[in-house]
Image 1: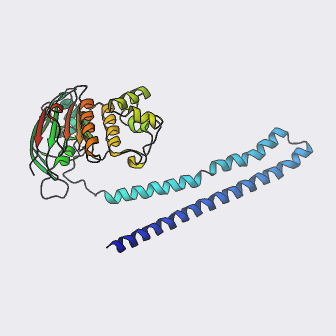
Image 2: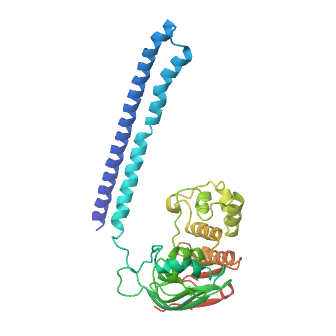
Image 3: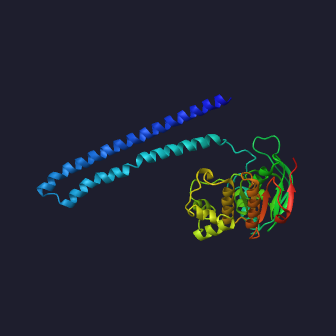
Length: 346
């Protein structure tokens, strides 16, 4: 088995190496051809104008323009190979996405409906009935993953009001993450899920996500700076706002040590630890100012000592503004940090 895996890895490495080599050769040839033509055009312009310059019929400034025009034109054309390469990459990525997405949306996935459908037609009206800090209620909520024959979660009943901190626990496979996907309307549900008495399935999913935010177990960080990763939540935030929210989640000193907001986090957060990624995701959620915040397994990628500090910091920072917090975690949480507990059966 190991030999087969190693052979497969070697084959993939060889394919990647050959593809990279072909791309490099192609870029080199394109650059050489453009340089050759640019040089030839410049020499031609120089020869064409030199006689006029010597004969006095062509002023010096005009001669300079004639010589420089080919350089300027080919400088523009020099970006064409790079643009074509980027276009091929984007097209290839789009084709992979198209292949992965089903032709029809599974019924378990809620979608933004057309403007003339009943659900969206009433959405503005019912959304106005949801307060700035809504009370979230679940009654007998269940959900299926697409294609599944058994529910991913079922029979969940809980209440989450402003300032409350509820710990949702349960063994692996009990449906904790499934429930998190339901709360932000990535999955449809059975039973009743209301915000201030308004049934969530009468709202467009994007409207629900303006009230309920999710910090995922493995938060997505973009291969960019700390600043840009935070600005996705609130693009009008100033650097002072960003530094303040980083201080709230315990990352002020860490950010300063890395050189400030311009420090990069790497592809998918490769340059930060699991705990730091969770704190950046929390900072992003605080900037977005969700009235209800769902935090899914924040300690999954950190050791026990760091996990205890992380949970405490999350609950304290997230609830400072009267925000409701649903902490999904299979690990124990001290009683003084929460207002209620809900345990899902196995």
